[in-house]
Length: 512
Figure 1: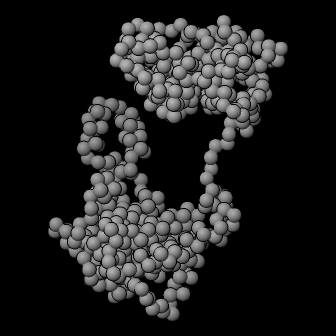
Figure 2 (figure 1 turned 90 degrees about the vertical axis):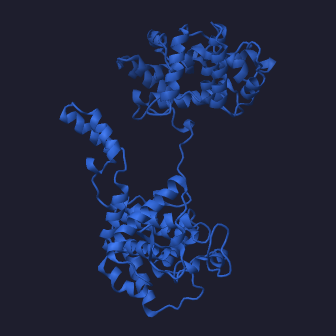
Figure 3 (figure 1 turned 180 degrees about the vertical axis):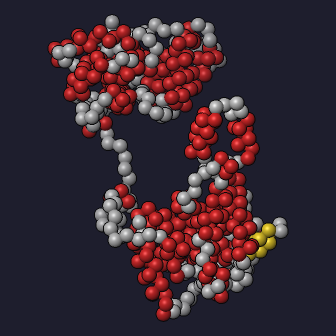
């Protein structure tokens, strides 16, 4: 109840009542007034909602004896569904009801939401297994040409990989799912209450048209054809010679399909389900690194990049930027685990994230507090000789020159920004990323490549746009010769005179 306050449950139940009884049900009186208005359309609409869909927006609806039973049976079936089917049905119902609400101000969005309410079910519950012939013809032909001569097994793997990454035959899946959930009652009992009910032959074409209209709006904001918003509630009208569902027709089709999905769904008495993850008004966010960075349970070298990323975040805040109350967590329990792991790793790339944490942390503590195996670990210092992002950070924050060529640093810069946002890669943080660009900019300036240096300064500014001093440095540049580009003078705050020695030790390490 603390999470929901009841409002989310009330909103969902109002949506179900609106959907099942085909009426407007809301706890917001202002929304009700707007939706039920018969005086004038709102901005962006050509007519009032009550002229496009029957009953839903009537100011007065006369209930009948069966309404209570119909609603009760539907809710019982809905909440009895397996959890995945329940969630899918509720999503579809919400989208449908949102679509009815949008009729008052955006017909194209409303039409698309009706289609999406069915499409959401088709994409998750149609059981479709994509085949190569489902893939778009021109794309398929280009891949087939490229695979000409390849081993059949290799070609099959490539095609399967392509299909796994694509939503193929989406329009056909939508149509097939919709038609499969049209019960005989749609053309019989339910049709008796409709004006100009659509027939089965036209429905097949109209469903294709509906999906095309939805795609046109989603991708290019193409407005719905004006013909489908005619008064009088006919369910279909011809647009360019093809049967097309009107708002009244699409609304009835969507409601029928969703109801059939719920009715046909498998119900269960009980089901294992982590209900806490479905609470509304709760957002899951990562814990601050201080709560977990020192933990050793289950730690392997594969966790090295993520731990180093967190450690550098703490280091930057506390040692480089000297932010108030920023601290570096005591990770010595983790460092002892690193002492056990590192000797068994065969690749420098596996060791470097662990070693960077290990040696940088020792820069922050007095020599007498070093771990007993510190000198033994120093035999791995040679790992820092070759270019890597970990080695670069270790060098510059300890005020040492990496000694790599300009070409090597250009490759490092390019490779880091291409790979750091994907996979299990070390991320050094925005300030150190700017430092990497500025460091490389200074090397280019020193060899007379001013244009490249300016590009790198611009790249650094755009990579760390919140840094006022960096923006000011770029803005002060003139067309004349570039000044010396000192990354730490630009990015780091000057130390107070009384603390300069201590801050220098923390920020740049013991100078060598």
